[in-house]
Image (cartoon, rainbow, N blue to C red; front, side, top):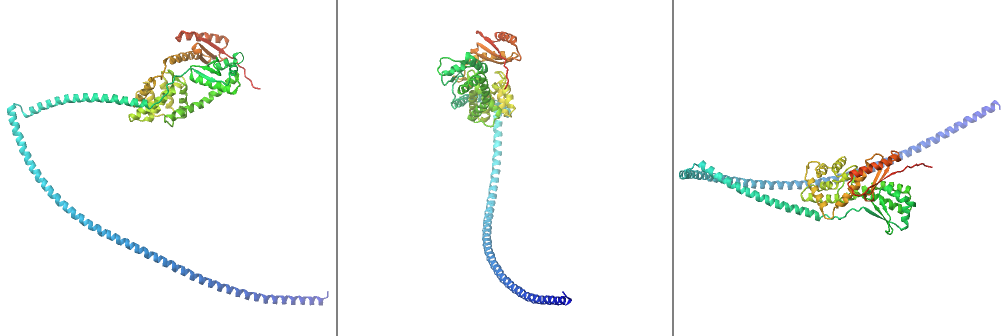
Length: 518
């Protein structure tokens, strides 16, 4: 390319750029003019909208002002009417006050007149009293002259006579009142006790020493006995009861003087019969399970008993221990039933006398709870029971009643006396107790206590109506030679301590077991 050509090309470029700039400038001016017109139109529309909105708001404000004005005028008229009514009431009150003031003034005048008349009457009465005193003094002087006694001497003589006569009348009256009170008290006491007894419906039952277990068939008797009698011997050793298999169809008898032991044996036998597997190992396993289940059963019995007599809020341990009384008897009378009966009687007696029936019932149901606590006996059961329930925050009146019931403490309320009366009613009603069974049970208990007192004895069971004492010893604490000596020593002590015309067989069993697991 030559220099001329380059110059021409540059010229055309400059011309093109100038023409483009010129055209763009013209287009920009036109666009700016159009935009300006549009903005002026938008501003005009906005001003028009503002004016319309302003007019609308002014109209709305005028309308609201008008409504408020109407409301204020209405309130003003209402308050004006109220003020006018109040003003009328004030006028009426003023008129009433004026009338009352006139009435008070009239009453004051009448009172003044009455006081003046009363004062005149009082003066007249004083004058008459003075004349009467003069007449009495003159009469006394005449009497002194006639009787030869001074006034003071006559007064003393008269007072002595009156006092003596009053003493005689008072003594007679006191005697009559005392007699009537005693008669009424006796009648009321009889009525209260009879009323309490009428409201108690108790069954007259005597605890038995035999329980019956039903069998599905007589074939089960052979399984209970086992090969060469091993099952029945194992059952008697574990449970401490006699198993009687006789001709009674589809049933076996369990004999034991201890109701709790007999109940455990019965439940164990029923479980074994239901399961069908009867052998020494199964007997021990089932017996242990029944022992654990009985703990829950005790609590259910206690809760049911407390519910029946309307007592709530006792500690769980007390409730469970209370349930154990079901399997304790005294003179053939079930102790739990006796305590329930005493609680109901005590509550009725307390209510009749206006005392706290709830506390009386609590004392009644708990008064023999010590009998089922370890090592408690007939002589100190109230003290043991008192210490037991005291740990659980029982009411002080109930604690005192349990001790005072057996004269272990001074009574601080009438509840102990009510408790003694209720207990006497429960024990002395016909058919409630039987001394023969109680003496029998005490004899068997003494046999077991003698055996338990020797070292090495694990369990001791009096069976065969006290003709045999079966003793299980710990094989780790005694060998065979010691077992023989132990039987001799126990037999000697039984012969010395127990008063019995029957021969007692001392059967010492030492069993060695080896246990392993595969």
